[in-house]
Amino acid sequence: MPANLTPQYHEAEKNYREAKTTQEKIAWLEEMLAVMPKHKGTDHLRAELRTKIANLTNSMGKKAATAHVSMKIEKAGAAQIAVIGPPNSGKSQIVASITNAKPNVAAYPYTTQSATPGMMHYENVQIQLIDTPPFGEQPPEWWLINIIRRADALLIMVDLSVDAMTQADELINLLKEKNIVLGKKPEEEDEDSPITYKKVLLVGNKADLDMDGRKYRDLQEMFGALPTIATNATSNLDELKKRIFEMLDVIRVYTKTPGQKADMTDPIVLETGSTLGMAAMQIHKSLAQKMKYARVWGSGKFDGMMVKRDHVLQDGDIIELHV
Image (cartoon, rainbow, N blue to C red; front, side, top):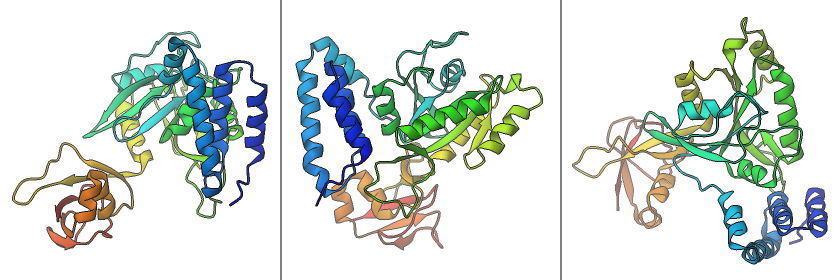
């Protein structure tokens, strides 16, 4: 199968060949991986690029290699959400208010110079938020774009005390230039497309400075296709947490063993529309293979009814697996 590489790939390849430093070479190799069509025709090339990245990383000094690896934040909790925005939009203060993270917070721009993860608790689910450096006049660092691509969803923070519409428009256009598009992937989208689609919540921050709410209404009108919310660092934070969870479009499923009560403290988190078989696979691959049937409480017509692996689960369902 031919690779059918895109113009974006060839542009990244050209930049890779012209790169002067090891860090730059790694950056463009990772960009090539990100924009490369995903099919069997590119499997060999994909493996080749990963080998080059590993060799270049190993060739760097220990300190530099550690810094490179540290820019890749491992996912934790039910989902990973990158929080992005322009300078002084207040995103670091919001992240500090709703998670256990302690990013730098100050009244001047560009205080955040690295990515800081933190865990947000919503009911019985933990969601990882990553506070990131602001998007300003200079192009974003290569590793920041990689964090955004790997995240499950985005929180875009804009400042309602200034021109929030321009802020949002510029940021969204910048993401488009990097082949990152907001919203669900269209069903008719070519599987070889290099475009990455991201769930998103657009947050109008500093709502207390938008006295009559006009700027937020303008923001909603301009970006009506995106879910939006107005907030500030001291109010509407519970609603913000709820909207973040809803943005993920996931369900919580609980397990029980025969003759015992269900554990309602640690749910399995799955995409909406997931089946019993998918839930079993997330618990353990061998369990999914051995499972004969299950009983379900919640979405079934009768509590404890027997269902097969193609049964579509609902939020709050309790499942009892039988092998």
